[in-house]
Length: 170
Image (cartoon, rainbow, N blue to C red; front, side):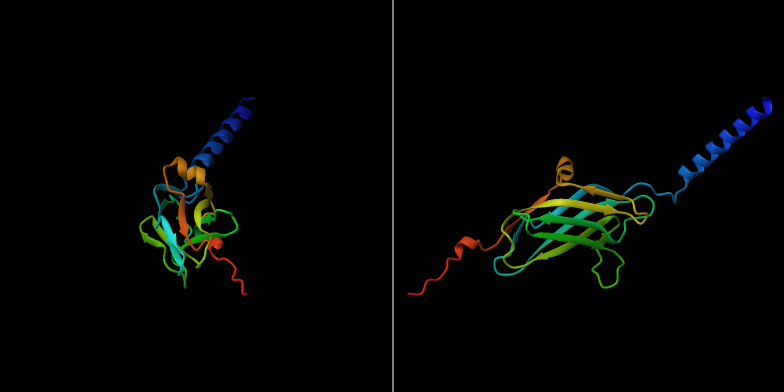
């Protein structure tokens, strides 16, 4: 009985040591990147009446561990008022042929262009996707960002379709 108890104590001690070493391992990244206190959409009004318009998103995102995935690990998607059009902004860092979105330590910025005549009205954030190099992912919704006090939309000014009346030849 005493030998069996000794084996159980040794097994429990080995299990405890294994658990401690796994959780203390700095390479065991199990948490996704976090959006910190800075998320900006600029400009708040995008004019696509006569030329394409650009919208830029800047975000302070930090990942302790493997680091933010610079090959599309940060993405933002906005939907038009009818939800028939969308614009996706993808942030790249260190990817050949792509503009570098990492403008300072943990501060990311990327832009997208809306074509002439994009649907007018308020374009709302559908999601903010955050991923790190260890494949940990977090997806934030419009409600999540609003709860943190961040902006979630921009307005598009474009020609209204009803202004273009058909021409009738007599």
